[in-house]
Image (cartoon, rainbow, N blue to C red; front, side, top):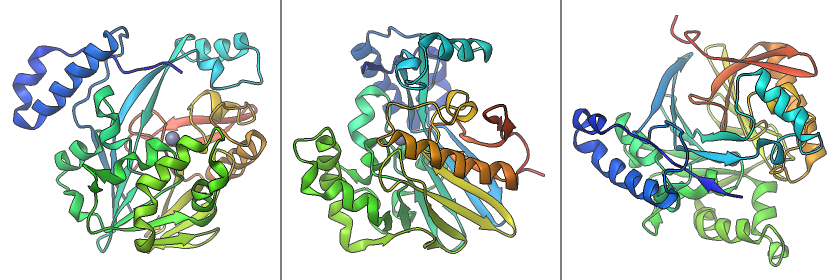
Length: 330
Ligand SMILES: [Zn+2]
């Protein structure tokens, strides 16, 4: 799949941002050169983050970056006619030939723990303008060493790439929480010589080194105070979502349960290329988002439009996405 991260920037932005942004802009220039700046996506690679409170917990959502991908109908709704997918995109004021996929790792500061949910692409993504979590942390006033716990929804590269930095652990004071089923799948030698071999190698490089500092969890297990894991398999065999509750307020970090705010939420049964077990993924989408819709609670979806937080209500065959506005501010 062609992945390009073309970015157009206006020079005056650099003047106002100062030293913090300089490395970002240099990297971005490299990304523009590499991509030929063919796209017109006006996404910024400045560190972007969004903060809000859920009860007494402070959330900081980071934009690790975004990619422009071709032919949305070859990723979402692969069991539909392309025209059907394109019609739904057009109806929702979206282009029919390309789409934006963004990445949103998040920090939950509980007062006693600083918990990072997924880690972005890390250094391996920076040449193409992603892997910006590290800059985002700094901009938000956190150091990598502040993080006490890293919880992973699943072990795809856009979620585990940030675990290592320069060949060393990126979060030196952290412990880790990983789903047992997910870990067992990706670490198995059975993956060698299969389409999952690349993922297997990435897990050996980025996750296995932390095994002794990792708590392996399953359905219903506690991640930290107020945070409980639920299995939502299909995207990957051990994919998990995390239910967060503080002072009676609730939010579910849904990871990659649904990855397009229109196509996958309005049509949870539409098959998605990146879901390893398509039927199981559809069942998990319906289970998780039925709960979120019924209980009228918030969710944070890793690939939802930044800041990746919103609500759903039942709509036609699925759900209507309502992005957050000031619900957490009042
Ligand atoms: Zn993902």
